[in-house]
Image (cartoon, rainbow, N blue to C red; front, side, top):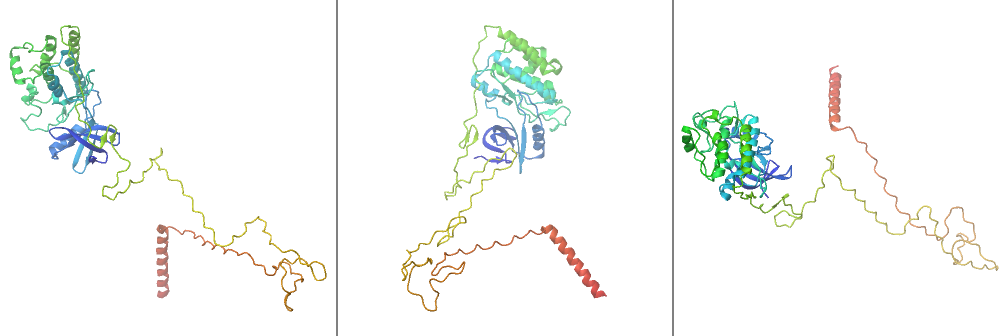
Length: 441
């Protein structure tokens, strides 16, 4: 099993690496699903501040992949987000090369929709590039992209974390004003969107410096592989002057929608089928689609063959745990010897012999004993009346079981220690005062 982070996130396998941390596929034990966890690798104050800024970003939009939660464990910190397994736009270009214009229109429309939500939070992304635009594995259906990696994003008006004359971002996707040290603005993100669109249509990374030189005498002609309707949108996004670009992502979307309508009616365009498949490898051993595999009998792994620990029933709706039913007390063993007769049971009659005829020809009265030798002169006469309640002669009474030991008297609990101790201390103090008073008199 993988390392469990902060008692909740179980790291499964690494799926990516960035400038300040590694991205892991992780199992969220609380929500019961796989997530992507970005684990911070550096711990200097500058990196931590960027990390805090990124994890604090909360944007709920279908085309934005923002942090969802975070956790800290000792000297490690991570934040989590949805697990997107369809690769990035860079992977898609690596698989297919230049993409169909209608497909590119759909991707750019979704990218601008997500950027609209980001800019509405007054956030400038500052690192829009194909590797930071992820795709859901939709197969041959309509693509679904997610704008990710807000590691160097910042809100307008926040203090910058970089030194003067130092630019952060990815070379080749800088806006001209960024290279001159201008404050980050929304139009810089829109310039990067134009470079991404050019990359998707040509299959090659655009040369931003060469593009800047081509705009010296106005908007140049459409590059090879880019249709004129698409260039009308991309060319305005790539204007070197920020004031000449689209001012908002919403404005760029409207222009792109008109272009998409023109392209949809153009029967000469080749409609290649593009499939976005799952780029993540299979889960490692010990993990399944529903999380870590827990076997019924795992033992202790020490060779002793110890069985599994007894299962604990889940808590009830109120949070309490169900207790097992009480076990029945073992039945007491029967004492040796004859058993006493139970109350209400008639006594078993003692067998007697047939009456013996007397010497006078009559029968002897019933005495309850068998006939035997003549009694001694001084002994009891056989025909003598027996006192009431006396046992008959030669009668062996049934053994009487020993009475059960009386249960010990129930001791009533005294006061608890937190009451008894102070009372005892007070009593001792009073006793000491009394002795002192007697001795002083």
